[in-house]
Length: 191
Image 1: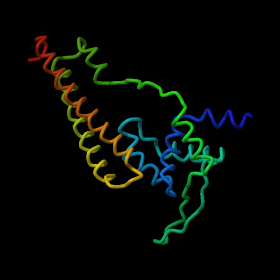
Image 2 (image 1 turned 120 degrees about the vertical axis):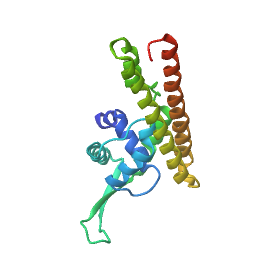
Image 3 (image 1 turned 90 degrees about the vertical axis):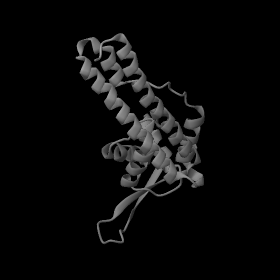
C-alpha cells in the first residue's frame, strides 16, 4: 500500500517527464530536455537536465519507465534510453484524467515592478515594459516555429494545440505590456 501511495504522490515534474515518454518513443535524457524545451517551457517550465535524470530514476523505481543502454553509431559512449512501461502509461493516463487541475499561479516579474512603479524612475518602468513586449514577442515566434515543426505528426496534435495556446498567450502578454505603457503615459508619469 505504501508503494501505491508513493506512486500517486509523484511531483508534477515526474508526470511531465512521464508525459513526454507517453508518445511512445525511446528517448534519452538529452532528448527529453530538447522535447521539454520545445513544448513544456511555453506553459509550465523546462526542467533542467538534473531534474529530468532525477525524475527518470524515480519513474524507473516506481515501475513507470524502463531503460536500456544503446551503442552510438559515432563511436562515442553508449547512451541510456527510456521508455514508458504499460503501468506508466496507465498511471499517467489516470493522472491526466482524474487528478485535480491546479489553477495557474501567476508569478509575473514585470507586474511586480509595475506594482512598485512608484519606486522607479519613469524611464526604468518604460524599459521593463518594453523588455516584456520584446520577450513576449520572441516567445510567441518560438511557439509558432515549434508548432510548425510538430505540424502533421498525428501524435503531436494536442501538443501542437498547446503551442497554439502559447502563441496566443504570448501575443496577449505583448499586447498587455503595450497597453500598460499607454496607461502609464495617461497617468502623466512617463515623458
